[in-house]
Image (cartoon, rainbow, N blue to C red; front, side, top):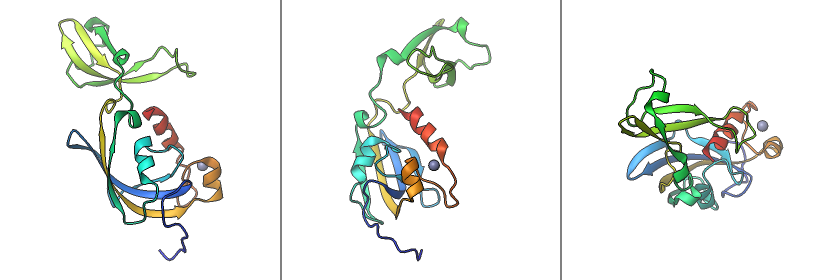
Length: 184
Ligand code: ZN
């Protein structure tokens, strides 16, 4: 890259290119390496809060291990998000196995959207009762990130106005915002 770049440290409104490995309970659950780093606008809540906080001041090439507690990650486990459902209420095509993931229709009570879809996992099967967990799979977990700053650049005025990163050709990564909403 020959583009002059006045940005040398991570601060608000800087576009960060980041490689990372995410471990939970010692196992790798997510990874973005040299080939597929993430790019985001710092300070906009585009990434996990606890990780974003730890990045301030880092320079290109810097590495860091960041431990994020559930409160700053995917939140604590919500006991109310665990529900028991009679086996008879499940469509026959859903495999009744531990860990099966399914999408169920929410009641929409806490949401503006009329048709809310919720991700659930089967965590217990006992007789005719199936227990579903609607928590995010990483809720209640301590997240262990290893990160490397692969690049920093100034955000364009348009990116700042939108609050998110655009691609090289001005491509809109609006789906990122939706991902972020789901993660909350
Ligand atoms: Zn945009």
